[in-house]
Length: 384
Ligand code: PLP
Image (cartoon, rainbow, N blue to C red; front, side, top):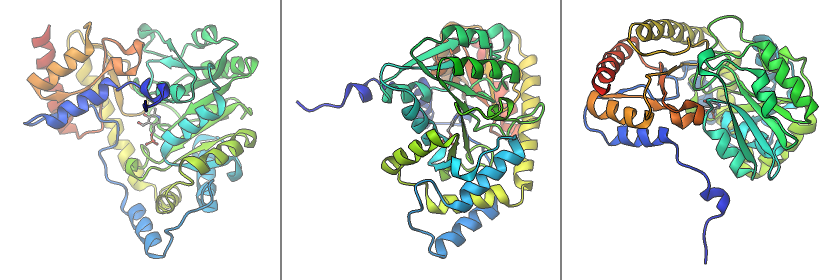
């Protein structure tokens, strides 16, 4: 009898998707605060560059690793903005950060080996470990410390089977930026275990408190640290699907080889758009960043004013991870949608550490955020 593999059947549908489907089917006005993408349009000069490229006939495959100008633009941005110094030959341009992560996990985690991730965690790492026939290990970070990275906990969880550790900073879903000394301790322990560290830094350009600096830069660019970046969040380019993996060539060359069989190359037109985004005027990006920062302040103020609601102060990205002090976050999220017209992502979608929490995305206008908080406040009062 035919049937899909155990590997694909083991992939679970996330509760975030459940909320998305409910919201799509709902009649009436909803304040959508569950979405994980900027509400801004891609800057006009980026769209123009893509359109020019298509008209000029840049509509064919590129080399698997990407256009040389695109790899160069990525290398320069990583060096100048985040202190992460890689030769363009050590960069593979991918179909979003998502493909970079998938290829990085495939290249580092063998069957039965462990992918260790501090929780709460973005759900796709678990799926990627499953697709690599690996084991996903979530290591809970303490809620009382606002989910700050506690290197000792990660190190205690590492075993002989640990092949890679993912560090996501700024974090989705908590908005935390991990302290450099904790990252350094994890990177050092990973070296002792012959494990890789995959630094997921797709939100690094949206760091509000202090300079955005990559983990590779904090740790002297050791060969076992891989960096994932993307145009999606920083340049409002989620739909263009343009990301990258950077690391030592012993690993990146293997990824480039695998990439030939997954997508061959990132979209040529999107690569031209990325060159314009990375090397062109940065004012639209600066404006977007300023808007996110003032929304972050608004969100912190509104959370503080609601009795029984807490969240660590977001230091980056555009998420606040709310603790509404309930047992069943999915039930609460459905109630808030149905009865109060506000949509948040259930925390249990971000691993066991997220149970009982809600992720709020502030990728929405200040007026809609205020409206969303009014509804949330009323909804929480009614639910309790
Ligand atoms: N990593 C994290 C933590 C994310 O939140 C996302 C998107 O939501 C990605 C990676 C992948 O983003 P993209 O594939 O759009 O670059």
